[in-house]
Length: 84
Image (cartoon, rainbow, N blue to C red; front, side, top):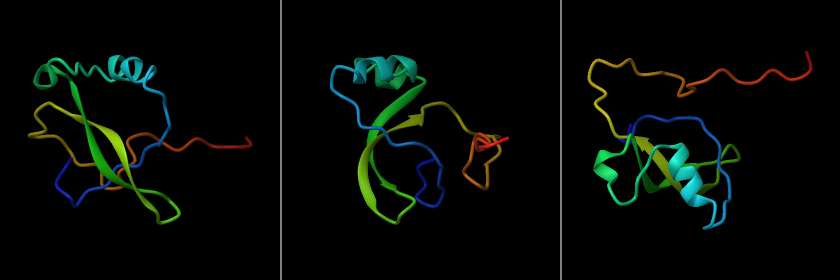
């Protein structure tokens, strides 16, 4: 959601210009037809765990969210357990 009030936990990766089209394909984003893509890529401020803010390319869902449940924690997948 881009309401400025919600957060989503995720990962930040540095990638090369050569890799970006592969990530776009994975995220089902077509730069030639963004309005027809499942996700759209935009530059957004992200907040790091250590408190830093930075600009990053973020993929936002491009479909209708009406009737969808907000995930209050912002964690759309369970954290990985380490060590057993």
